[in-house]
Every structure is written in C-alpha cells, then in structure tokens.
Image (cartoon, rainbow, N blue to C red; front, side, top):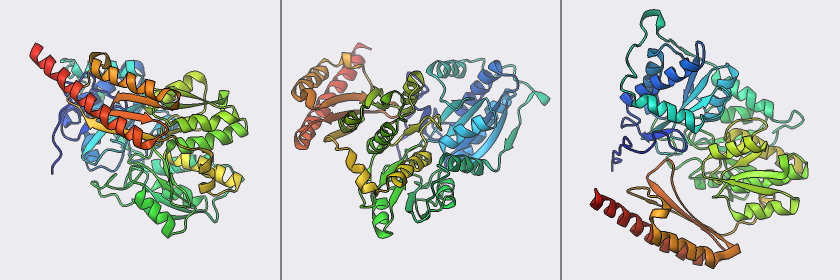
Length: 469
C-alpha cells in the first residue's frame, strides 16, 4: 500500500528534534520548499561569514539526488558556494565540515526512517548541530515572502564542486582514533550497513585495521535503505554472526550515526548496554570525565545501577542526541548516548558515530581479552515496555487531565522500583509510552491501559478543540 502523503506545512516548527523530516517530494521535503530552505541557509551564513562555504552530504535514498540539487540551487542562488560529498555517514559530514573549514555542513537523510522519507539537518562550522535559535531564524527566513527578491546575478552566483575523496578522508580519521598498539587481526566481524551511508566506509575501516569482515545490508539500490536491515532489525545480523562464528556483529542505521551490536552468542546489545560496558571501563581507568555519563530519560534503569558500584552516575536529558551532546558540552563530559544506539565519544567526535562507537567498544574487548558475551554481563536490564501510537495532535500533558491522573497512579504504584514516561515523538506524528518495573507482565498490562487512556484523552481534546473552532 502506498504511504499516505502527509504534509507538515502547518506544524508549529519546520525543524523537529533532528532537523526537517518528512515524505520526500511532499512539503516540507518538496523541491520548492527545499529550494527556499537552501536560500534561507545561504542568506543566514552569508550574513555571518565572508564568502561562506557549505558542504552537502547524503545517505543512499533515491530522493537524495533530487534534494541535494534543490538545496544547492537555493544556496547558490543567493551567492554561496556548495561542495557535494556524496553518500557519507552523518558523522563523516560533521567531520568534513570541520576538516575543510566549511561554515556549515548539511546532511540529507531521514536516518532510520523508510526510503520514502528524507530529511535535512545542519551542522555549524564546529561540527555541532545548529542550536534551536538559529533554526528559528531559518524558519523565519523561509516564511519571509521577500526571501527570493534581489537575488544576485552573473558572477554573484554561487558555484558547486564535488569532493571526490570525502569517504577516504573520513576513513583515515576513524582509523586514527583506534589505539596504535592494537590490531583487529584475527577478529571476525559481521557488518550490517542498512544499505545506507556506511556501506563503503565501514567495511573499509575494519578490513584495513586487520579484521575479517562479512557484509550484510551493503548493497544499496536507492529503495532498500533500512528495509528489514540495520540497527532497527538486528535479527538477521544475529543469524549471520552465528553462521560465520564471528566475534561480534555491528549494525548501523541509514546514516550510520547509530550502533547496535550482536555478541558472539547472537544476543543483541542496545545503546544502554554498550554505554554500560564503555562507562565501566572508563571509570576503571579514570577516563570518564566527572564520573558522569549522559543519557536520555529513555535509558534503562539497569544502566544507572551498573555504574553505581564504580562511582559513576547518570545525567538524563530529554530524548534526542542533540540534547545529550548539549549536556555533555555544558558539563564537560566525554561519554553519552541513547538507548537507540546514538553514542557520543566526545573526545573524538561532535556527534553520534556508529563506526567510531564500534571501534571504541572493540578496543575494550581487546584490552580485557574477553568475548562480548561476557562483557555484556556487566548490566542487568530492568524490564521495560515501550508502546508507540499515531496521534492526530500533540496537546500538552496539562491539557489531558485524565491521562495525567492515570500516569500519577502508575508512578505511585511503581515507586522506586520503576518509572513511567509519556512523550511525543519529535520526528513523527506519534506518542510513546515507556514503563519500567520489576514484573514484565504487569508493566505490559500497564502500558496497554495507558495507551487506551492516552488515545481517548487526545481524541477527546481534539474533538473539543474542533467544537470550539
């Protein structure tokens, strides 16, 4: 069945928690809107820099060709030069932005979403995502009816060039982060690149460091990105790890800024378990700044409990790797991430990087001389149930008294043994319920009940709003 065309034109913000995202060729990811966004980006950076340069990279979606041309056309039309990087992981684009001294780096990707979607996110010259206030300024420019007036002509137009070796430069950077005294000789690794942006660079890095690499999800055709492969679907990777008797499996998502791992026994490790292994190792070697690890409200309580005996503590942020990075920068912390696999090793990178995270994890595996199945035993997960459902609107929780009361009741019942969280997705028209507690069957029942209450409350709110209008 074709995906329903949903326009986000009238949403409160053009930018969500991870840039602009939507169905490709439909607003806000339509050609005309992206050209305007390109003009807004060009005008903003032209106002702040003399002769700015902007790099543009993408993942492997078919719509990437269309959108990079539209984006570049808009930027060049206001007199700013662009540089095409081609398919490259999001962290690679952040690295190249810094490496060639560009003023901004733009990623065309919808990350883990299906191929029909696409998105745009922007890095500043320092390789960090744009702050909210800059995104607000860009939104105002896009909405300005005079945006396309008084455009330059002749020599005032921008130009576009292609950087041919971006993938190679990024691969060199990654290999340099791996300790010189270690080698991957003798290590068997299965890589699932999700048919995405890491399909070339990931095997290149691990093979050149000495590993024997087996590939899965490394044949992109423009429409198979994230299609039952990658970080969201590690089951096939687990089968491959067992088949090849590999030491571990590495699953990336479409833009390779996430990492999910499969151990030598075929068990899947999410971002929390990877953070537990790395956090404890860093604490043991006095490498964890402030003895603090930054994660989001979604991270499992088991991560918190795993760090405590070693003197480590968690700092929680709202969901979104940009908020994790923000907290790390403010506090001077060097390790953080999300349960979903966005892992930030801030000593080396400004954003989540799946390949870099895998290298850091393998470093620990080699240092400890233990298989991944033993390393993962450092964390015992608290049972956690997460439910997502589509919503017609996203009213504030304060406007949903029945839902508020139900959530309060569950919090009292769980007390110190668990947690309950209700939130809206920042990138989709969905709400999410997360409940942790000691008994999985009971929290599953709680989650089902709270979904019904939430759906009823939101529908009732929407109906009342419509009546008032």
